[in-house]
Image (cartoon, rainbow, N blue to C red):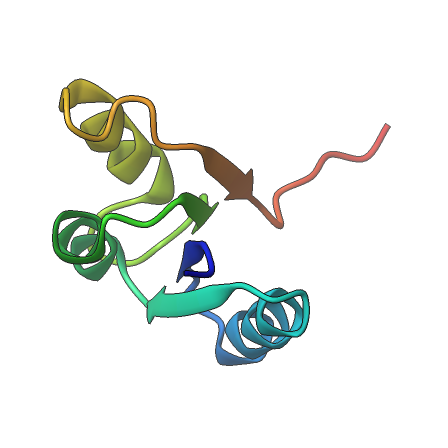
Length: 89
């Protein structure tokens, strides 16, 4: 079975781009557009990888990551954080 990636992103265009690229590379995907939905999908789907937006509605991506790491059953789940935040030099 193909690995499952949870994409947690609140911007529809960004979510679609990530979904398209992951599925084109041979992965299965599930999507969440807020932090609460992402946590629910972690429990329901047990993804192999989470692509997590830093700034999600309801529960921030950083808090979602903290909660995932606090649970023994998901502590080792790989997480890639995305952010549009940046600083000018």
